[in-house]
Length: 94
Image (cartoon, rainbow, N blue to C red; front, side, top):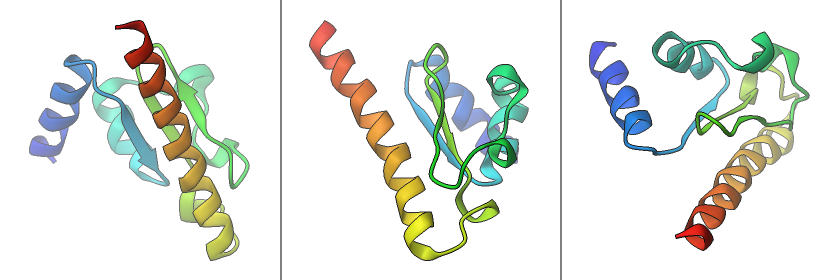
């Protein structure tokens, strides 16, 4: 766990974006602190993405709430899209 924590901290410190699916939220929050407004994957809809734009971290519930593979796919797809959109904003501003 120490190596994962060091990796996440290094990515975050370098300005990288971090996406967490399902219970990975607990790993990320143990390193970077709680999610905005105290929310977590159990507070989201199955395809929803919680975005903490200020810290560059993203969360979707994954298997914690998905009732089928298509719902799981949609949530992960939405998480990736949110990250890609923020990456595009960064490229435009450079």
